[in-house]
Image: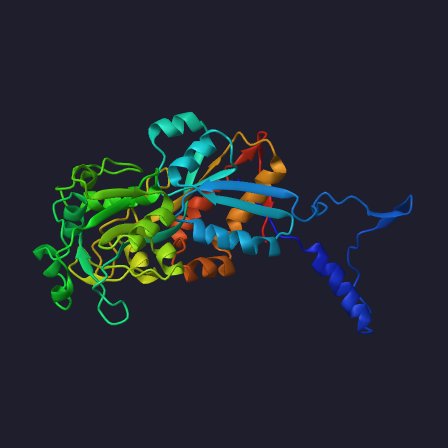
Length: 394
């Protein structure tokens, strides 16, 4: 089991100085002894209190999911205030590229919204995937006739999305869309819908296509990080690399539609559609509707700590929701200082109230306690050079 140790010695030393300064006889405490060697003062070795590493001396490299990138970037900015010796470098290159990188041992951890396939698990040999947050995928659109400051947002349902991405519904004034939007039906134009999707291997695509599969049996293209998009075959589809690419195509292409992470849309001030969920309720993406979806599937985790949480039945549930995961090696790490620092970073962002608050502000939902306990148990089994990794909580 991974062991969590809280440093206390410095508190006792500080207390002894404080009492002395107040003129009160100090209660005897354990004081670190020093000796002078060649004019350099060094502490007598204390194996329970390792010498702090120089600032920025450990760089932990991660890559993958753009879904989790806003949270990971924010945590990377904040964490040096917790442990100055650590620099977190995370690159949002897509879940598919992230999984290839961790399998190829070119990063220390990978971010993915896509679960490991049987083949990836075999190639990676000792990989552990674990959820870190949940979030929503939202539908952005570009309809010049609508004024985002005055008009209601577009409302869609699962069947309409399936028909749009199948290339069956091709105009914004199609009766299937106008029936869902009586307040703005007159403004919806007879213009062809440009269907935008990710061109790279993407966990966001896996969440989105999981949802399409759950919405209707009419969706036959399957689900995964990449699929053969039916709309491409009709000439209405176009790909964009990463969330930035999809967003750029939609924003620069009148009458386009595309999917991105809620956190990305929120950070960039992008309007997105409401959805009619499985319960027949019109809902908006956000922390509350994501939490509702998580509750719908509270007992759905596999032994590998993965779960599909789309199209939940709750009244308040956002129907295109997913966990975002991190992936690490569990037995083949050889740099034990880095292994310790990485697990300390994970423990911090999973459990520290300030870290989870930062993620919530970006539109993510932290793990419920029952899931968090399973994750910490899995991380507690990580070894380095055959020995358990002992970490110190922050």
